[in-house]
Length: 378
Image (cartoon, rainbow, N blue to C red; front, side):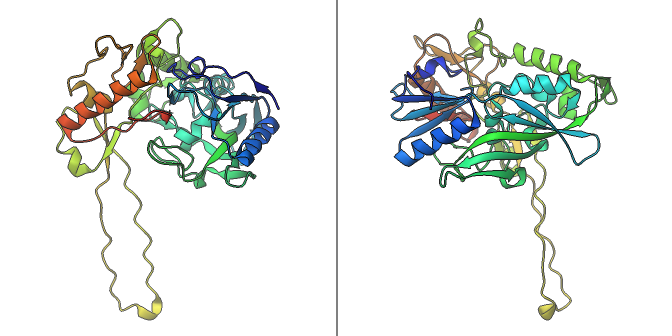
């Protein structure tokens, strides 16, 4: 098993924080990854699986356990049972954006709006990543994973992963543990084979982001190029020359609130109604049916509101930072907390706590962090 001299996690995470752990293992194949995890779990060590490091805030003290780096690579093209579709099976350590680029080059649609998102394929379902109206839940077929509780490898359909807004049963939410502790080994996507020609773009959110009128036709490559340019303007494409990209992307989730609470926010606050939950199936045993069918309960869908707007309108503008602090808001995007130059994890956490307090004071809600926090508290 390829155990290596531990590297500082600040070298391996996009927020650039974290000391070297006690132990580090590099897994280049699925077999090495499975063996490493089974050994670590059998020993009872603390453990952390590291992919692209783009959704982590790691504390300043050395991680007291084993870090397993997922470095598996490869994409396999497979037939789909649906006409006009193709399946891609990708290893967990493969770069997400490299997979998007490969799909676009092959004329496969369904993930092109998620161009430029950092990290690995294996992390994508955990977070149910998304951008501009596309989410991985829309194209995910299944994942191959290893369960931490049993060490068993199995193939799990997407429907069993509890995929929701930036969440799944696999995600380590701040202050809680995953419903199903497991590590993804591979991911299978199903994408539409649209070819290299122009086609009509579906989805108002993506058309708006790209400045397209309804009915406009463009190619997959055109969409990818313009999404990358849009993300770059916001500092959301990794660039060693740009400290605005030394971040975990959006540090806070857009808030999901009730429609009633949303009405207490200023009208100018951007908001997007979520789809209504399907009504539960009503079953009335024939033996007790008296001819009366009770009316269905109706509920008003929840609303997603813009965390970036809430931050800026709580008085914290882009580029905000404390005096002498090396952490600050991005100068391009109010949702990104950035490392402006060898900042500690505590400096970033201090800024995050201040932002939470300001938004709560002004608007009455607490923003929740999107990255996984390891050895650091808000």
